[in-house]
Length: 191
Image (cartoon, rainbow, N blue to C red; front, side, top):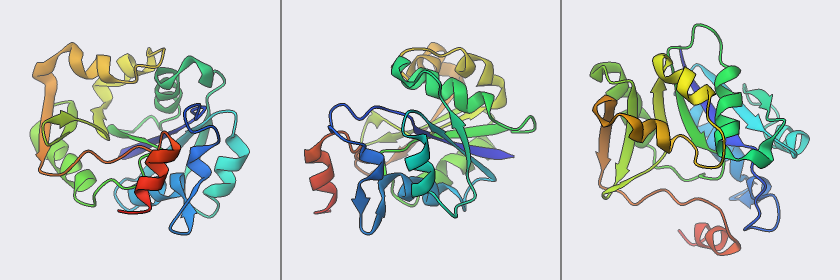
């Protein structure tokens, strides 16, 4: 089974309010991310933090599971560890996506999953016009490393630790925008 882990536990300090709940074309930002993954993976775990109930409400009716990060202030690494711990024992791989990246182009996730299925490398990353980005696929064999993550660096240290085990899928597309600031949010409305 391939699972999706959606990171939705951040504090949105640069936005000044909960960015995942902001409306984008009639639905919350985080709902765009989860709805984009659901048809492509067999299980979705949404890692929440202090806004757990509001994020759950924003995702009402979707077939997602939730895992609460008890220490979201420790950063993205702690949320990844919580998400990995919540995976079902038979999960073969997990695609880790950011809850604040609602406009990942449609071909990206299928291409990453196809590369993982045929490639044999335990980590598959997208490269957008020369820049490594997200979401990223991690095989089960990498889960112990993800489970030990701390701090705010995310999984970049795991990806960079052994480059020979990473497959890069190149896209001639711009990096999907994060919604980190009011300006980022405004730009999404004009795309």
